[in-house]
Image 1 (cartoon, one colour):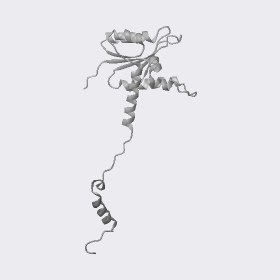
Image 2: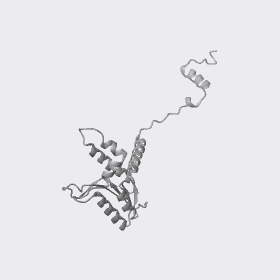
Image 3: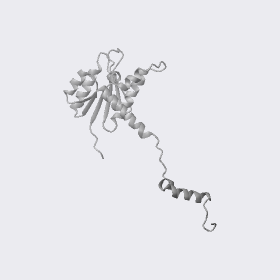
Image 4: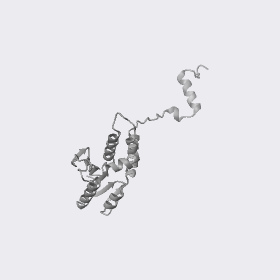
Length: 187
């Protein structure tokens, strides 16, 4: 049985949606029939699930709900990822810092995805790895391209005898096939 590393991926949700080029493009689409921000959020969740793959045991996307008086900070599980809106009065930064600290205390390896300098400085001081929002965006796009290429149908080129013999021999064989070649008893 393969050894699985005890790794946690924490993503600063709104920071990635604002700073990651892949998500800005989705978010800024002028489509009045759908909420483009929700489309970008769903794309981020799907990308985090794909990025986690077999390398990460756990993943959390934290969105800032601190200014929403109705936000209770409850987790929702989507696939293998936990999605959290910070509770009213608490910033996503605080939740991310606490998640990273608690994971390090438990001995987990932690990667935090954010371009927020304050969070980066805080978590890096605690022995946590970090990745920029745009860096994650580019990695997710590359992973998506690789997946698309792997799933594209491939047409195998059929190698025939005609492809492997010289043109003179091929012409003689075609003449025999078509009955246009003179037989030695007819000559």
